[in-house]
Length: 237
Image (cartoon, rainbow, N blue to C red; front, side, top):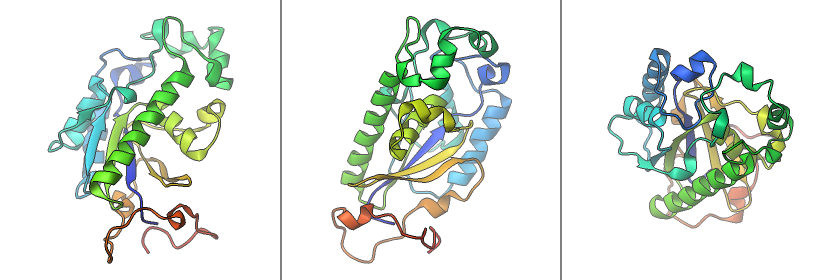
């Protein structure tokens, strides 16, 4: 499938908070040794993938991930990709938070969850989706339909973007997994987004680069939004 740009969503590597079972939120936690190794490894997988743009959450764990994975890149900070503001939950242990009355809401009806002194999950999802869709339109307009671009963000943010791409309600987004240093690929078309890859921690990312076009660049057509009936032959074709 060609005709639209490809977005690679990269979650930051593991942090000290992840390892300790804490909720970092917007605190300036950094990658631990495992997270640094994960970032270096995903950089090897991204080697040779032409990236038309690299954007990032402003938090240090995302910037550290990109410094290790893509040392030659010059990431642009996008505030819309910042972690959810968990308010007074930030810095606390997840096992303690699991006893809070809000926990079942976060698990079962996240669209109704508003963190004390923090952000609503629905607001987080809306601004993250707006950010990536805006950037995708910009990259497609400036670099054409073969462009690949990357956004480095956080687990819940990525899950919310994936839920939107799948057309499922935010209340179902807890069914989605985005591991540290995983890559998720989405193509937005005029009719629908396509989730090309999800939570990939070891696959060949070069297969996500569209093949060079043999004819003059054109605007996306309605056919670019069509799903392949029967599943198709895959990216290798």
